[in-house]
Image (cartoon, rainbow, N blue to C red):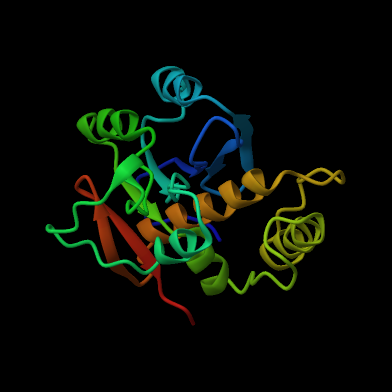
Length: 207
């Protein structure tokens, strides 16, 4: 998975959680698909500080996974309807912004990256797993799923430098997102899904 035709030297993948209660991870790959950095964060300020200070941002591309908003009203029917309720202008009952499906966490950080003329895209982690043949054969983000995903990344995509101890789900997802960043600049076929504040969310073609 080498990047020979692109001008980018580093490919930064961010697996973004929807709140500081859950971990987010950042992975940086070089042009030879080596993991040069893999780190975990909880607070939005730490993610912002990383991008303010990291030497890898120059001549790079950033890909960030979509985080889903988990704020909603109580009640089983509301939990289910959040995923399917059409968002019409006349739908006024929206206490706690419960109809919003997408978290806008760290948007200011990503806007600053874009203002520095660093390419930035968004992606959906489950779609990426499917497109790379890294489907979840177990319940997503369980220990069995993470162990299976880590083994697949080692054997199928050559990330032999990963440690023997099991990485967190967010770290494994950050590696996949960084892979997508590299594929994107090398001309992988993608299609737009939607936008989050003028940043496109792209789907990778399933082969």
